[in-house]
Image (cartoon, rainbow, N blue to C red; front, top):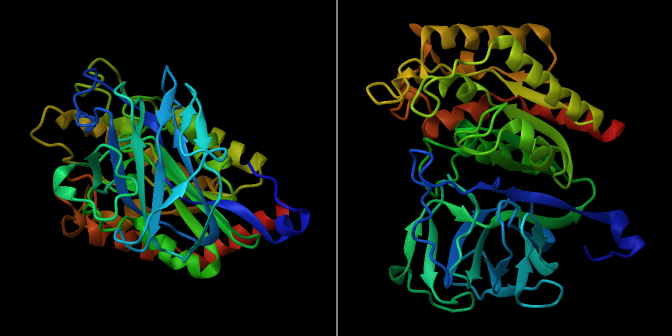
Length: 404
């Protein structure tokens, strides 16, 4: 990182304003397509992302964390507000391209760019190699366009020549330099955080709405959801236990964590993913929650929990209809009872009560159901954000700043 003058560093710092939690690419070992087959190399990856807080300078973080060989990253460019605006080139140690070592990440040099809060940032980066990319984010809820050749600085890109996917290779985060009184909330979880059920390119995830509520208070919200993620074990994505340090504790500017995970720990056992595995007990999962709470508190970061949502009927009629069983429902109820009664989380967002059907509390309310009996749609996500007490979050943030 470039050294800032002592005077400059007192008035500003770097914070994360957008993240896409990186995970290892899978092959045929999982029954879900990785949505990366069209990435063949010698292509420009183009997407729009929405920042949370703005700033005066920008850095982008690229990942080869799960690669086994170096990854060449070609030119990278960004434009603010509109894809038709002139793109500016980001550099790496003053060079227009870089090599990301296997198992590592790489941060760009700072780029002078006056970015407003909640602005759209159009990013393009060129991947010249034909070797496979191993680090990606599966479920971006965003259109990612693969364009032939290096089109990072092409003024008028013909998107018809590209291939659209919804997975994102290599790009892991955007940082901005902003005033020191601005901070970050990191939300880690599974598909309910990642936005499964929300319209593509809509910015309607509940974390997107939460960002709108917190940005006026100088607080960014970054999304570290991974669809399919579990609390304790890897599988479709990396477990919250493994990535908690990277995706929450070490996020630049972090002052508060929000944890939503655990339903996949119950759901996947007994399905084609793990046909011979029994679900973990409530006691085992509670211990895992307590471990993450302790890790956060050791760094003076409050941690907010979310109760596990109703899931009766999830994947019904499919090979995965054993995702829900009465035994698993009993464990979910035990976990929610513990969350409500123990007060071990610094605050609790009771999604179970908010989203359940009053006539059948084991089910997601039909009016909020995207159709899979597991995920809420756009309006359901908006309802989640509106249910969260901004006053409570601001109080926890203030406490964190005092004790940090």
